Image (tube, rainbow, N blue to C red; front, side, top):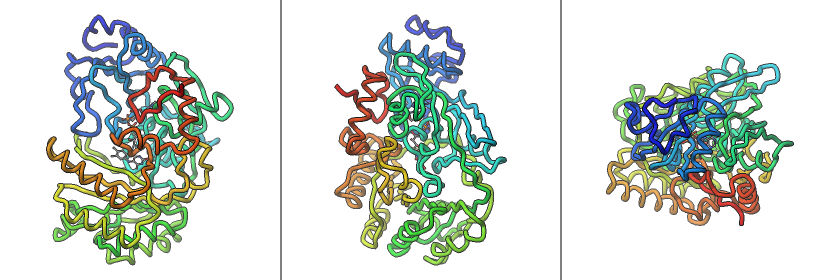
Length: 457
Ligand SMILES: Cc1cc2nc3c(=O)[nH]c(=O)nc-3n(C[C@H](O)[C@H](O)[C@H](O)COP(=O)(O)OP(=O)(O)OC[C@H]3O[C@@H](n4cnc5c(N)ncnc54)[C@H](O)[C@@H]3O)c2cc1C
């Protein structure tokens, strides 16, 4: 229900059960904010939908009255797609119900839930779904784009655990889709992002994980340790997934002050297997150099998602890419770029892929980059518009220096990289297949605030 009276153009939203937040509402500024700072859009209304009927009503209003429509689950879109100037936002955060069936090891989860909420709910059952490295990312966004995280080599992408979905399409239909029902739509939403409708619930297969060892390992960053970290990550057994952030050391209490601001590998190490094997598998990383901090230990998986400050609003520019490996020359490039930048925070993030992700056939879902060995993100914080331009040039140059030949990308980390990169995100037959599904379910491209797949002619 609206908290302030609705303008005449939005009276069709009067029947919505959830809150309709418009510019006159005292909490409008708080509610329109998304994860990233520097995104300052003013929607005509943000609708905190509570059920499928609410979603349908907003879709109908947007379609009939020509409003631009944004969909928001966790608000972490790196391209700022989950808000709009003058349009409507379907905000799903109050649709966050988690129904676990521990016997069948399945769960129906509303897409407004966050990764940490789901991980916490599954913890007592020793069950997991692999999401990303941020607990506050929404299930909706990550599970439609792909989902590359701490368990990717053991259990695959987040989409690899999706069994079924409920989708409200542009014409207001509420569809339940799986391998046998509307299989093309089910294929497309696993990797094709928010192009095809509002996904309100997802059914997941849950993975048993009785033991876990993980945490933060900080090593000094030199070309040799960076290349060694990459090689060790790529050759580790599937149980081990790592995320290595080469960056200036933040002033953390557990890190001696003389290292603050110096380049380090700030790594997240996650071992989904027996405690005994963990030490053996992690040893090559500890041997790369004397760790500056080693917080890797057996414990609950949910500890990988520490509490976050909801008021933290970073302003950053980034580029993403796939590479085969980080050899010593690439490691020198990373070290040089990061050493020469004066951005308050800059990073090259290394993620080894392979394992369970690579065993799924490329054509099985809309995430086709199954054989790419490694994903790298480079990013820099900026302060103000002029600085943004300077840092944007730096991330583009850095990307080109590391990967001059291949523009393919993972959709979850794409920013405003342009149409060619969206195309390269969906290689081979994937693009044509997605465009045909789009033409069937969203022929007028109502859902276009995303890495957009245009409907086939
Ligand atoms: C700090 C940070 C860390 C990240 N780490 C990782 C990581 O480790 N691994 C990884 O794979 N990704 C990661 N990402 C990327 C992240 O997965 C994507 O940005 C994802 O889209 C965010 O989902 P969200 O629901 O929070 O975002 P939102 O901004 O709410 O949604 C993003 C887009 O997804 C679509 N969408 C969202 N919900 C729905 C829905 N219910 N129905 C239909 N469409 C929907 C819409 O197009 C929307 O614009 C990270 C992003 C950030 C900001």
